Amino acid sequence: MDINYSTIGPEVLDRIDMSTIADKIAEFADQTLASQRYLNENEIRDYTFELIDLFSSILKKGEISGSDPAYQTLGRLMMEVHGKIQMRGGSAEAFFRLIQFIQNLFLESLLAQVEPSEEVRQMLLYLIRFFNKLVMDTFRLYQLERKMAVEAQQNELMAVATPITEIWDGVLSLPVIGTLDSSRAMDLMEKLLQRIEEVRARVIILDLTGVSTIDTQVMHHLIQVIRASGLMGARAILTGIRPCIARSLANLNINMGDIQTKSTLSEGLKEAFRSLGFQVSRTQAD
Image 1 (spheres, helix red, strand yellow):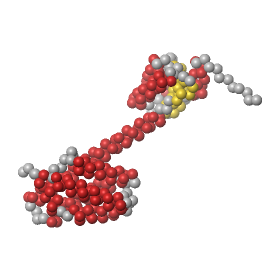
Image 2 (cartoon, one colour):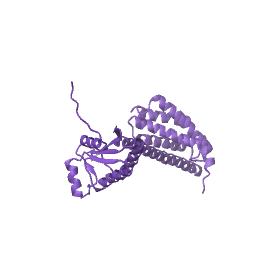
Image 3 (cartoon, one colour):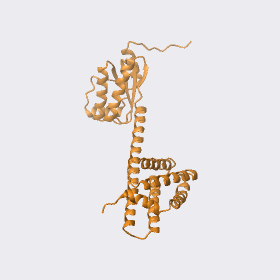
Image 4 (tube, helix red, strand yellow):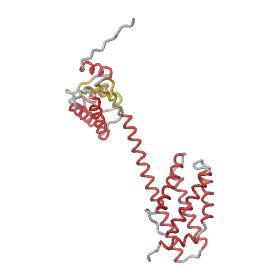
């Protein structure tokens, strides 16, 4: 038999005491969340009041819809509560335990006030459907929020890990730090070519001092960056090749004949000056 949720919601609202439910939610939150300092008493009181108001609004309408403004507001409220709990050291488990408690509270409150019947069964199914949707939607928003946070952190790390500095007129320095995969290599190439165009660079120094290991794929990415820079009119100098990196390159049998290398960044900078026709000399102090 089809269930008419538009009429069951208001019936559920008539059968349960929302004021009692609000008191029990606040009491549970005080014992579990406030005691751990995940939420303070004022926050619990405000969140409980808003939660009950939104629940009442949704039940009064009956239909459970993700497009309902009240339901959307409830979802945002759940994420706000979850965010504060996590920010203060709590876990997702503490938050979903609160949701489970509220669900059980509604079910027990309904069963305590009416005799079992088909009508009650439909009301219970309505509440179970409502809370299942709420939990799934909240979890989906939580996953989306985490994904966005991770992507933002990765972008920040990418920017820090590929600093391109103009150390002299027409000379760019790019220290490569950590692991260089395909995604990062493409990002590095894009940023480097943009900087070459901006400052009209004639020499770039790629420093590998921060690279602990190197393989064929990594070297292939670096060669791509060097050749792309050459097409932009910038000569590349590879520096920071330590003995372990040199052995790896020899074992990989990679042709480095057309790529100029220097052992240190200092040597690479001297070579850059020479290629630009600059002469650097030490002046004697008076």
